[in-house]
Image (cartoon, rainbow, N blue to C red; front, side, top):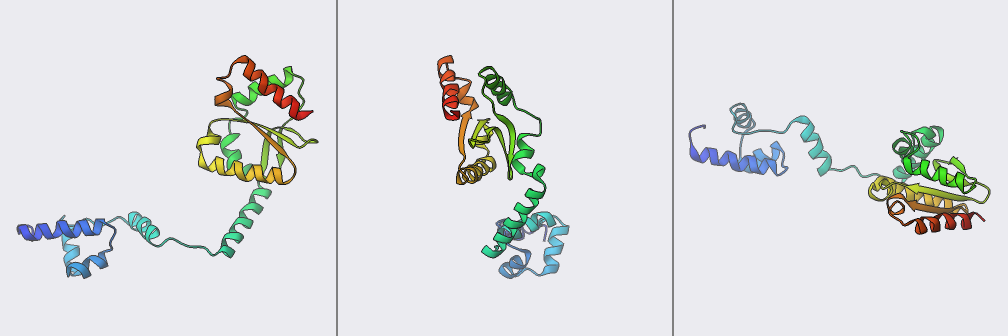
Length: 200
């Protein structure tokens, strides 16, 4: 088997077919190769099979699990219940607050102090923690790092968060830090004035 050119060519074709995502069973049926021959080919290096891990990944890709809407609803309710009981496990909080206040948040904390703008920091409402909030007037002021615009998980979380807040009468004002830090002093002053006006 190792010296016959046609045989070598056959194994190249078989390997190519297998690498396209077909199973060993499909290989034996298509090419009329017995299982013992396939085993011999593996042993002598004519054929390379997938590892168990690679096989599991391929199987999962070819046969994805599809949940019914009822199952999805149960999973969603179960997840929400867990996060309500363990608010410190909310993915956004784990990613965003693991190192304490960000520099932009520290910066605006000083700005608000200098402008005598009184806000509650890190106000928790349901699963969400607000950067700065006027709780009585239901105003949320968020100082967003770039992850809020490039990390799809955080983008989706922010959309759910905004909907949750606005459905309950909150206003959400966002400052995109990457834009803000490039602004002129006059434009930065305008942002602060907008926040003041919102809080009146």
